[in-house]
Length: 430
Ligand code: HEC
Ligand code: HEC
Ligand code: HEC
Ligand code: HEC
Ligand code: HEC
Ligand code: HEC
Ligand code: HEC
Ligand code: HEC
Image 1 (tube, rainbow, N blue to C red):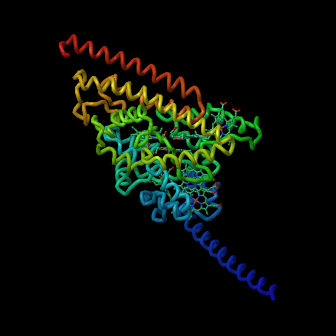
Image 2: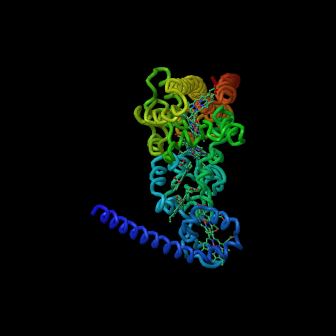
Image 3: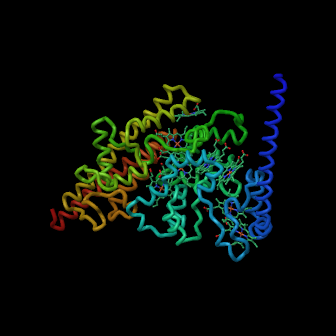
């Protein structure tokens, strides 16, 4: 009796299986047939693309050219009809990664870039053309309006988001798991995480593993193991890029210093009242807005560290990072107040494009005076490096490129301010 139920179940399972796999084979065949023309022609016009695709898991699973590009383009002349895939194209088959990605910070990268007040001053090629800011911020999701703007500059490339870590047309998971996949963007001036990681003990061990000097399974965390644990595509950290928190941390002096920095960013006006920019900061999730949302990210990170370190060790290491943010905020706030006093005393005049007679860190390198350009570099380059270096276990970045450079900036800013005051006085000003 039992045996016959088992048998019947097995038969029904088997026929479902055969039916489904038959369907899959049929679908594959259809896709392959539809793609034959694409492949034949593109093997000649762009063999590298076809070769990469042949090596991919997609080609082995019947995901072919028309699946992502449609089948409207049929000849060498009508290629403008080829569809450029969006993240929704990938979401049809990879809904989990899409949903995670959508709830993380990467999804907001295009919005955050566009929210910068001075973005319109940058050349189009740098933004929609993806040669500068846009080249990195293309990772973010785009609205229909955004895509229309991009298409005014170029045919509409750079809208897929999903292809920045596992690149076309291999879409390799091994590539995405390598720290090098993050390198193109997490580098350079204000976020050199790659350089910091490469020189840290974590990164050195990773390199030695790859060279075969350390065993293949030796412990050496990658960017992905810390920031995309269990393949979770929702990336976000506690302090974020700006190293700020709203409302600011409990400590009185620290809170006052963070308020000064928020004034410098124009998120608060010189009197400390929120400005229109606060809405943009909230919309782009630039800072964690509640203590629990900050703590949630911190706990997520601690779970990662404790795979290899003790909880006490990991907690103390991250707390030292927090302490370094506090100390650098103190230097930063003093520098901002030094320049703000020049506006208050009429030594510097408010430029027409400034919202307030107060230094504006968001004018970037377009800041109107050398002293304010120094202030921008102190904030974006040196303050960032101080805490980013601390969190990424790189003493050289934390100290020499970070803290030490901030101290030098402050000395220079004070000396430049005194000089400007002397010039004003000798010109009969104050
Ligand atoms: C008869 C040859 C031919 C066939 C068939 C063909 N293509 Fe193309 N395709 C081209 C040429 C030529 C270009 C333009 C290349 C260039 O600018 O160098 C192109 C461009 C493209 C582009 C880039 C679009 C752009 O705006 O630059 C995509 C994507 C593309 N093809 C996909 C496909 C797909 C998918 C198929 C099958 C449905 C297909 N092609 C069939 C020749 C062909
Ligand atoms: C899994 C989806 C996917 C498949 C399958 C796929 N492509 Fe693409 N293709 C992309 C993405 C993503 C881009 C880049 C779009 C962007 O820049 O936003 C792209 C870009 C292109 C381009 C223009 C960019 C360049 O480097 O010149 C061509 C041409 C192209 N694909 C041809 C093909 C051909 C031919 C096939 C089949 C052999 C194919 N694609 C299969 C996703 C796919
Ligand atoms: C029609 C369904 C379909 C679409 C659309 C699709 N994929 Fe896939 N993808 C698959 C299948 C099937 C596999 C193979 C899964 C496996 O072997 O476990 C795969 C595998 C992958 C992998 C893992 C490759 C590896 O090395 O293990 C990545 C990454 C990936 N796809 C990314 C993308 C991206 C990015 C897009 C959009 C540009 C996309 N896919 C569009 C079906 C699809
Ligand atoms: C194409 C460029 C690009 C690539 C590749 C890229 N990122 Fe990013 N990443 C960004 C941008 C831009 C932001 C800022 C987005 C925002 O917050 O608006 C960001 C933000 C982040 C953040 C969030 C920081 C915060 O504010 O909390 C983390 C963590 C991160 N990336 C990790 C990674 C890792 C790990 C990789 C590699 C697997 C990677 N990224 C690959 C461009 C990139
Ligand atoms: C080399 C790649 C790259 C370039 C070029 C670039 N960015 Fe970024 N941007 C990033 C990365 C990566 C992050 C996240 C870094 C971090 O969290 O430490 C980021 C963060 C930001 C953020 C903060 C987002 C947040 O939510 O915290 C803004 C705003 C921003 N960039 C605007 C711009 C603008 C405007 C330009 C051009 C003037 C630009 N970026 C150029 C890669 C780049
Ligand atoms: C910041 C880099 C980055 C971006 C952007 C990104 N991925 Fe991934 N992706 C990864 C990493 C890292 C892995 C490997 C995760 C792991 O360890 O299993 C991965 C793995 C995958 C896999 C294979 C999963 C498996 O278990 O084999 C798929 C499918 C995938 N991603 C789809 C997407 C889609 C769809 C998007 C866009 C919505 C996207 N990815 C955007 C980094 C990225
Ligand atoms: C050992 C774990 C670990 C590794 C490896 C790691 N990070 Fe981080 N990352 C952290 C921690 C911890 C923070 C700070 C989290 C917080 O705000 O509390 C952080 C912060 C960040 C931030 C936000 C700004 C900052 O730097 O403080 C970005 C972006 C980022 N990491 C990207 C990367 C990239 C890209 C790599 C690889 C090149 C990488 N990380 C490697 C642990 C790691
Ligand atoms: C996959 C394992 C792994 C993970 C995850 C990991 N680490 Fe490490 N970490 C190591 C190894 C191995 C070393 C090198 C040990 C040594 O220096 O003796 C190291 C070294 C360090 C160092 C440098 C110590 C020194 O003497 O220079 C610090 C700081 C550190 N880790 C902090 C962290 C923090 C914080 C986290 C979580 C954000 C973390 N690690 C996650 C394995 C890991």
